[in-house]
Length: 390
Image (cartoon, rainbow, N blue to C red):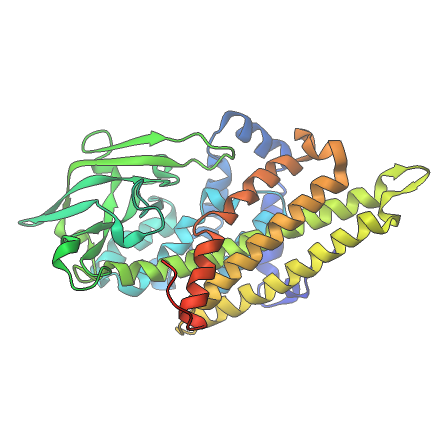
């Protein structure tokens, strides 16, 4: 198999090799069948859980591996590079950033060992709303303190894996926006035990999309949760959630790098074997050069992902790097996907080749978890000092 990165020989080479071995048990036909019926990859997620990969960021004292974000990135990148889809379970990794940095000792001891063992799933991340979109500070879901509880009303959209999660990390407003001096104030973060409220004060509506992403809309109707489930201080949740968002962008960027590697390897293999007009199509520069360019773009994005993960692990400000990594990697995977389809010609649209499935899956990351335009706005304002554009 073509080696697309010298980083496969880094300190996580053993992890990458083990993840490849696990992914070999879930070949393309496994993912194609799930895609056809829009089913959740339960067996795959269980295998990852049992192998300890989904608890890689949880400290050893709570039953995890205690490794850094780079290790998680290596796992998710490898899943994608082997033709799988880590989107079914990646939230369990990036939500750890918020809980580990801002959760209380009691919350960590209550939830982390059960998450590490697989007894609990933390896959749902409730932030986006239909009326607010990417403008997180405009969300309307409200949590009102009532004695030892909070009562929550509102709704979330694009809350992926809500149907397959026991816990949700939820952002809600606890102070009306008009009563705050800054729009980022008055937002609070909660851990919601969905098992106690689903079908009662919490309802879930699946949203069918162009890819098998198990996403939903969630409604809260006087949902009562214990006040002890508040993460950190009331009103400081926006800052807390940024920790998870930066981790999310870095890990999804790693997934995009993995997608790009799959597309490039698949395109190169096809170009080396497909014979038209008496010779391999890879001998044509019109076929070879786009693949080579996609490879260069992937490698550049890969370097930014490593830089972002390194800064995050060091506890440094990593917002710019996380955003750039996500944008560059999403661009690299989309370009590699286009090249792969073009290289295959008509066969690129045939389900049995898996190209069209991966093509649909990687297209998501031009839009989510944050669109390219919002990343450019962030860089323009906060890195380059240009006037705010929105």
